[in-house]
Length: 90
Image (cartoon, rainbow, N blue to C red; front, side, top):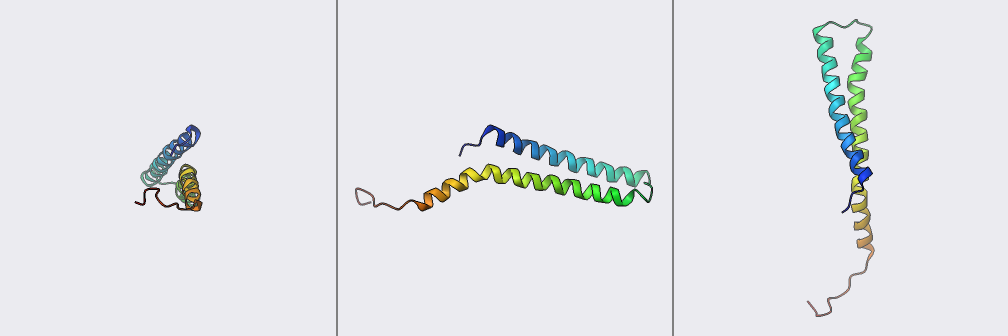
């Protein structure tokens, strides 16, 4: 199961991106709690702090699917092959 270099980099970038996005969202929520944010900014803050990690997690799932696709394709090809009896009868 060989993973291409670009797919591996994409997966690594997606994991790092998700971690940084979640950390930034948590920091933004903590900053808004410690220094009261203006009421007009709260809806934007909530949407940003929930939507950004969700979007990043979606990209991570797409990167994982790209990594797993060659293995799944190989399994489908192997399932299509006919089974042959062992030449020595085992």
